[in-house]
Length: 347
Image 1: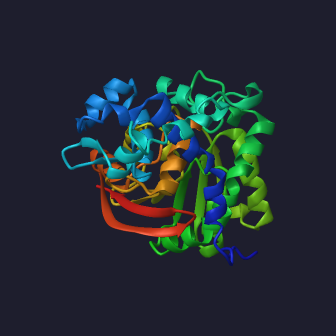
Image 2 (image 1 turned 60 degrees about the horizontal axis):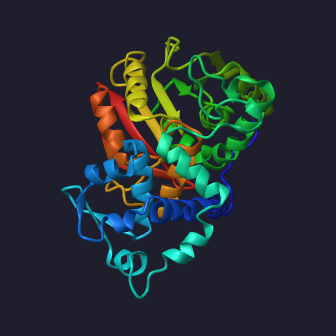
């Protein structure tokens, strides 16, 4: 078997640079186009009232509001009252040090206008080359994940993170002693490969779209684990969940969907495994107060632009889990590039 070691250095700064443009775009949308600071110049407002004034859905407001709080423009108290920070008041409202004109220099760029439109309509951007939605599949909609060339390109684009985090994910999961793990939306199969290399007695099933599974099969062959790697094609929302597993991995899956879809999937998975089986959410986690960190607020905006989801906090995930019949553990184990594992089990 080939080794599946983690990288020798930290690639997180490169991931952050990929999403860095979204800081500029969120700033210009919030300050110039939606003019959030001027709406708070007379004092604090309830979060829901401000969101209504802006004409934003809850999902869009969380994405924008989290970023503006992470940028130290807004603050929100325990009663969900939103106000300007002293810096936001000094530099982003009319006055001697008003710098909105400077921010306005980039307000009409395509990236800013595109993000503004997506926030207002609460929908992801159309994928280039008319491939359909990039990272999501929904019955009745065109998806790039159902086209051979685009499915391969997009899956490979995401596989770098799996290769970076895979060894640490495997270290956490194999310690639980499961014999057969279901990797839902497992994409390239690299997390499954890491698990199989870490535990020679384990079997893993990758459940994903048929075109995506072609790549998972190739990686299974490359790393010599094909005999213990099962590939099952299906739609996790529409098709039956493969049975016979005693653990479930959701790695960077739930952030593609809004809360109702996440809860629906969690309930469905709960009914497909024995009681007490572990479920692991491997993802990034916003602060529970939804005020950062900035790097993850930008990632959340990227997810909003490409999918029907966003980044969630650990508290939000725990609420989904509890409502779907799971119990959770308070510890999040970091795995790299801002990701970590939140463990739970069915009850």
